[in-house]
Length: 144
Image 1 (cartoon, helix red, strand yellow):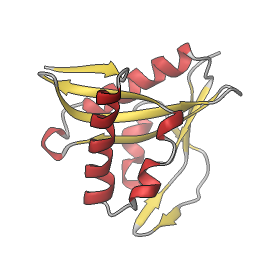
Image 2 (cartoon, helix red, strand yellow):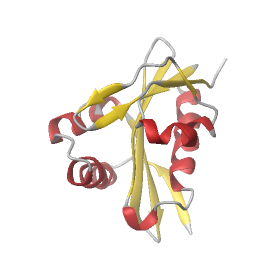
Image 3 (cartoon, rainbow, N blue to C red):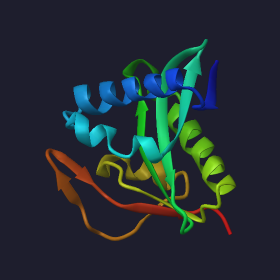
């Protein structure tokens, strides 16, 4: 059974960052400095399996009502189990509670259909190339 919880302690934040580094830096080759950028300003969630962190994601809630969802990271052993979906939905709830009206994200191009299934739409046809990664911009209106 997977439980999703908002990060509230330094130990939980360290677990979230560990997963970010494992997925984005070790697996995908993203520089650590880029991976860690923005963590201090974000609200994070963790997915726990019997108290063991297996996934994380974050949202930055801006004062203008915009939010930026990022760093959705699921350990390889737990992918394709609906955890990413649960993380995104939990962050949307947190963002709405903080007054966010719309959320943007920059996922890999191959994840477009996953985010579209959650109600996100492409902002434009641009594809940004970052290293060997093809990134797009998507958005969703979440609050009023």
